[in-house]
Image (cartoon, rainbow, N blue to C red):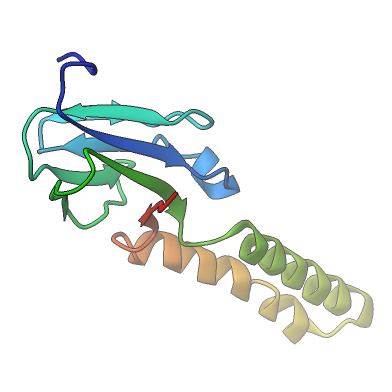
Length: 141
């Protein structure tokens, strides 16, 4: 399938996020065609027919199928993002470090135990929210 001959296109790009950098993200178009999404480059997916369905997955997490309808423009642009931002990840790590070090130096065991709440939250969000962990955000530019 040639990208030039296709009447429609989908452009996907991964956001540069820490958690996404550990995952092998792929786009599945119409349940048949699989396109890997590299870290730094946008991927142009040629589409021959109108009304394609697109799903983003890493093998475990999966987005809900998105049906695209081409009316005005022959191109849809999306950014693939993780639900846990780098700021949230850094904040959780900071909370873990502050609580654990406070418990370590003060001798209060409860602070050491509470320091693992950010890790438990992240693991629960990673494993329990399979359909919300990876998001497909439309780009309007």
